[in-house]
Length: 206
Image 1 (cartoon, one colour):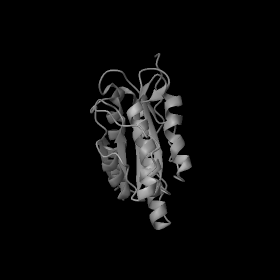
Image 2 (cartoon, helix red, strand yellow; image 1 turned 45 degrees about the horizontal axis):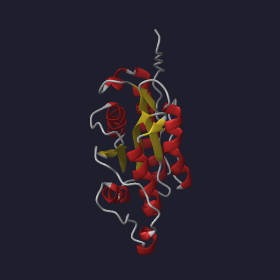
Image 3 (tube, rainbow, N blue to C red; image 1 turned 30 degrees about the vertical axis):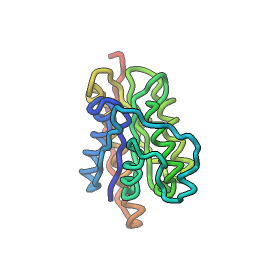
């Protein structure tokens, strides 16, 4: 089994990657393969409703100059999805939104029934709104949403600073454990529930 993780940040090794990598490492401990795909820092085209993808019926976007079709191909062979994004103005990065919208429209068949989760990183606020926005397409694509012990949010400003958010990193591990459990349950009909870590609360003001 394999989980595709999309790093929707223009910063390859920033806080979004740090959060996703924490989940990926935990998936590995559960015997689940994963791949983190970085969308890069070049423009990702938005959907223009041309409907060519529907006309051709090949589950590919008509525009092939960016990463969209490459990620669609990876989603075809993946069993689950985690999309991560930084928070910009209370919203996910525009490039990752464009990517998800085009993938969902052109290749929704490759998403159906696969567990999914969203992850957001921010300096201070807006993460819950961005998190909700990222999750909404999953519900329209019949994707079971994987939960954690809290909303999948990590805090940090400087590169990889989110690693210091102990509760945020625990949330990522719990998410990974729950996703591994769901995948195994779907695949075999039986799976052992993951053990819960002792809660590691972390507040802004100490």
